[in-house]
Image 1 (cartoon, chains in turn cyan, blue):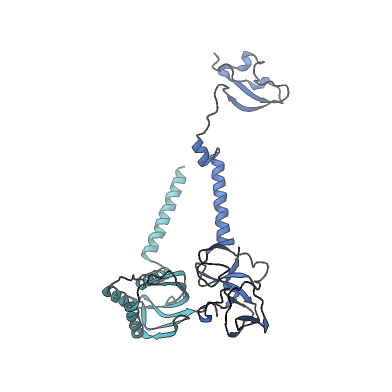
Image 2 (cartoon, one colour):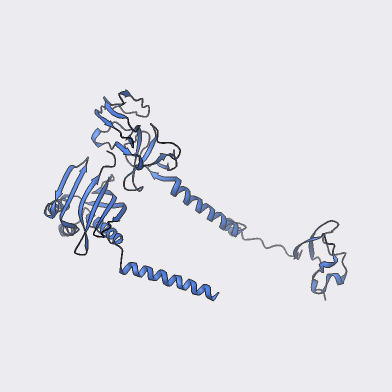
Length: 165
Length: 223
C-alpha cells in the first residue's frame, strides 16, 4: 500500500515536472502554434471597433512578419495578389483594417513542422474567415513559412494552397 | 443455545434433499449458534453456501436507482464503458460526423443537414464516378463535399452545361438545374479525381470544383 502511494506520488511529481519544464522551455512547435493563435486574435475585430483599435491591430499584424516577407493570395473572390516586403504588407494591412466592416479569422487543423536546422518551420492550416456580420464564411487552405529572427519566430512567406486544382 | 430463528432455511442442491433441508438433522448436526455441520451430509450434496432468513425479504433497490444505474451497477458500468469505447472508435476512425454548409450540392444536400463520412469506404476499392466524397483541406475540420465525375487519366470538359468525359457526354440525373458552363478540358493525372458540386446554376467561377488528389479524399458520404 505504502509503495503504491509512493509510486502515485512519484508519477504526480514527474507529471508536474514535465508540465513545468514545458511551461518554462516550450518547444518550437508550441511557440509557433501560439504565434498562429495570436495572429488569429490580431486579425479578428468586431464591426464596432474604433479607429484606434484598428490601427493597433494593424501595427501588431506587421510585427508578425520578417522584413522581406511575402504574401501570395490566390482566391476566386479576390483574384491573385502578391505583397512583397513589410512596407507593402503594412500598407495593405492598414487599408484592410480601416475598410473592413469586421473580421473573424480562425486557423484550423494547424500543423507545424520545424526544419532540421531549427531556424525555419512550415505551417499548414485551414483558414476560416467571416467578414462583418455575414453568416457565410470563406475557407482557404494556407501555408506559412516561419523563420527565426533574433530569437523570435516570424512569418517569411504566406501563400494559399489550391486544394482543388 | 440456538440463535437461529425458526424457519431459517438452508439451500441445498442434490438428490433426496428436502428444502428446507436441515429439519432431518439432529440438534448436534445443526451445531452451536446455528452453524450447519456439513460433514454429516452425503458427499454429492452441493451447498449454495447462502444461509438466509426466510422472514427477511431481500432489500429492493429504490426505483430511481434502478432507473439511473440499473439493478446491477457493476454491469451498468461495464455497459457504459463498452458503449463509450465503441462510440469513440466508430466516430473517430470509421464514421466522421459532418454538418453540410453551403449551396454547391443543391438539391441533393442542403445547409444544415447532418451526415457521416465513411472513412473505410475505399479500403477495398478506389472511388467511383458518381460517388459523393469529402475532400479535406489542411485537416478534417472543414472539408469540401463534392461528387466525383472524372476518374484518373480522364479528360473532363464542360460544354453548354453538359459534362464530357473523354469527349463522351456524361448522364447526370442528379443535376436538376440547367447551366451554361463552358470550360476545359481538364486532364486528371493518375492520382487525381475531378470533383464538382450538383448545383450547376451557380456561376462557374464561384463554384468550387477541380482535380483532387487521391490522398485528399477522406471518404464517401454514408447516407
